[in-house]
Structures are given as C-alpha cells and as structure tokens.
Amino acid sequence: MVQQVRLLTVMELAAALGVHKRTCWRLAAQAEAGQSRFPRPLRLGPKTVRWRLVDVEAYLAAMVGESAPKYPSKMCHN
Image 1 (cartoon, helix red, strand yellow):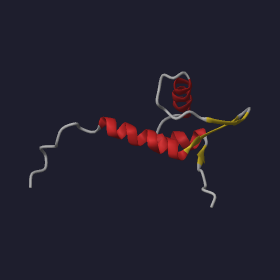
Image 2 (image 1 turned 90 degrees about the vertical axis):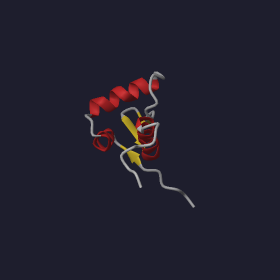
Image 3 (image 1 turned 30 degrees about the horizontal axis):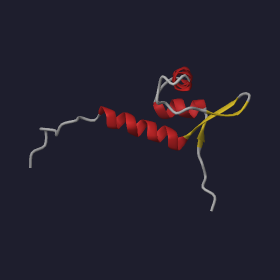
C-alpha cells in the first residue's frame, strides 16, 4: 500500500507555525547552511519548494520537548 505524504507550501507552513513566510525562508536557509534543525525543504522544481508535514511536526515536537520543564511541577499535588 502506498503511503500518502502531505507536502506544505510556504504559505501553509507559515500558517502552521504562526509566522510570516519570510521567516520560513530564513529558517530554511539556516537549515540548509547547517545552522538550524528546521526541516530542509524539498526542491521539486526550479520554483517549486515544499516541506514534508511529518518533518515539520517532528521539528515542533522537538521544540516543545526542549522547552518543557526538566523538573516536576509543584503546581499539582494529589
């Protein structure tokens, strides 16, 4: 069975991240230069660039994991 791969345009990526599309291009340039863990875009043609949704989701999950507290919260006591 063939698995569908969802590809995002720069506008869809920007909307998903809540940033401007220029920010996406800046992050992509940093990733291609090895300065960021942001997902590298797929170049499908001379003017066609897409990002795999699974790569973006993994990047976001890693970012959330890095920002999570490293100690137990004292807010909840049972």
